[in-house]
Length: 177
Image 1 (cartoon, rainbow, N blue to C red):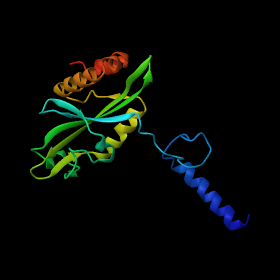
Image 2: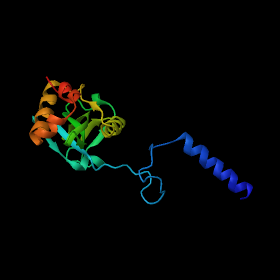
Image 3: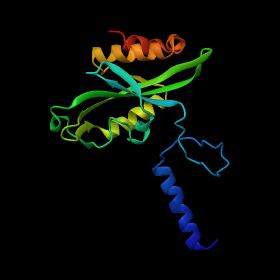
Image 4: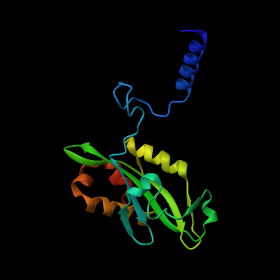
């Protein structure tokens, strides 16, 4: 190995130590196809329509292509969309636990959408971070308003009562109004 190759290897080692996007090797160290991929098989995006009083699943939200988001330019300031319709995008992670599938991670992100002006508000970093928190089995719903909590709680319970019963007590407490 010549000096140039050694210098490149040292640079790569330094870069890999300073910026680690995903911790752990999802492929058990074989280093082949799929290294560093994030498994989204267990996460489901649930929208809470606050004014409509309903919750629904839209898998398009995984890539910001849900029915709520299509055709909307999202702004970083909530005040820029004063007449926006309120929504919550809730990331729900389900895994086998306590004898069956269970809600293990539930995190909520605020959104507003004004279809008339084709503008909306959402914080993309918040959405990404909350998706990550949900995958890491965290519950972050205390910031939701009471009406939204009730809609989400009813949706999760009605979807599968057993999954609700097996869920962590923190989720049940945080969604109790």
